Image (cartoon, rainbow, N blue to C red; front, top):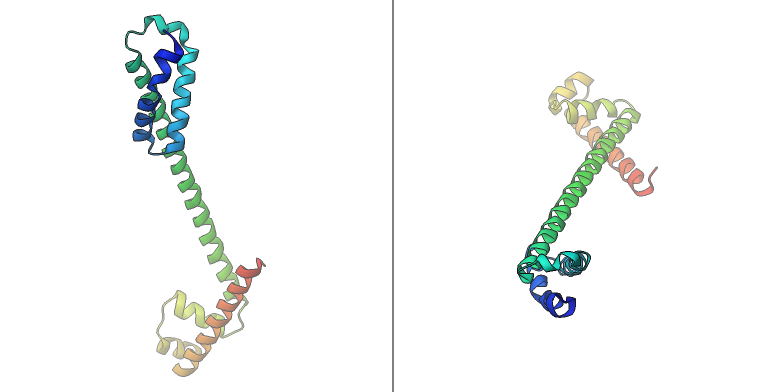
Length: 159
């Protein structure tokens, strides 16, 4: 068997097979190159090969499937890393907001806790804090505005 006459003419067919499995032109080209390299490295076995095309296609199929599995595994790992990063960012944001709430002056801190955390109505908050419902609405608006401003300032400047 000769590399130029018996192996190289199968490149196009190998490429189409690799492309159909990997769905990526660069990966398919790499697979074909790896098939050629693998065939060359196994040149001592050429005499035992009865069907060159079938032998090369099997090598190509195996390499393509390996690359596809590796790519899927790497994609899953990346998704897991992104998920962990997102979870961390969310926990960090919640922690930051809790800190900002604790830094609000009274009664603004209580208003945020009672309304947004405990879910009390304006009337219930007004009764607990001895305020009118209008005062609760105004103070709550101011408290939320302070939290939003402080959070945005922190996010924009990383402080």
